[in-house]
Structures are given as C-alpha cells and as structure tokens.
Image (cartoon, rainbow, N blue to C red):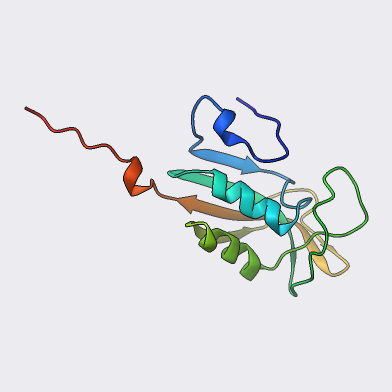
Length: 131
C-alpha cells in the first residue's frame, strides 16, 4: 500500500506501518521534512532511510530539492541520531548496504543507511481483563 504525499501523510494508509523504507528520500529533503516524516510515524515502527553522509554539518538554508536542484543535501551521523532522538526513536547507523552509489563523491558518501525504531506509545496499548 502506498500514499504519495509531499507531507508524509501516513494517516491516509489503512493501517499504521510497522516497517517503512525511505530509499533516496532523505537524500533530497531538508531537516524539517525529516522531522515531519519521523513525527508522523507512530510506534511500533522501524524506518530504514538512506542519506548522503558528510563528516561536517552544513547549513540547510533551503527546503529539499525533491526532483532536481543543485545543492547536495548531506547530514552527519550526529544529525541523523538527533532527528530520531527528538522524535522518540532509538537510532543506529547501518552504513553501506549495497546501493550502487555507496561511494565517496567529493566531500560526502552517497546513500548510507540509517535505522530509526520506535516502540508502541504507552497510551496506544489496550489491556483487556478476563472475567
């Protein structure tokens, strides 16, 4: 099941996903878009997302370029961890995962993988008592 949305409208799905892939999404969007994406996924969920990794943080003065554009959109591992942590996720860096672009290009590495995992929210658990 897919929803095409520029605002990560996962609530339009018939069920909240428990596993999601953002392949070559975070490589084209700005920090606010990443925060929006992570805030809309409710636990339990694991999201695997690719990103262009840089060793140094850069200013993200523009919104993501989506279907083109000239600006390289890169993030550090620390930035990716912070996006997750700020939205209640446990995070881990996966790194190279077999994408053909897993190479250095100038000052960054293409298509590294990151994992975000969130447990169920306590208020979303329902306890049923037997009689």
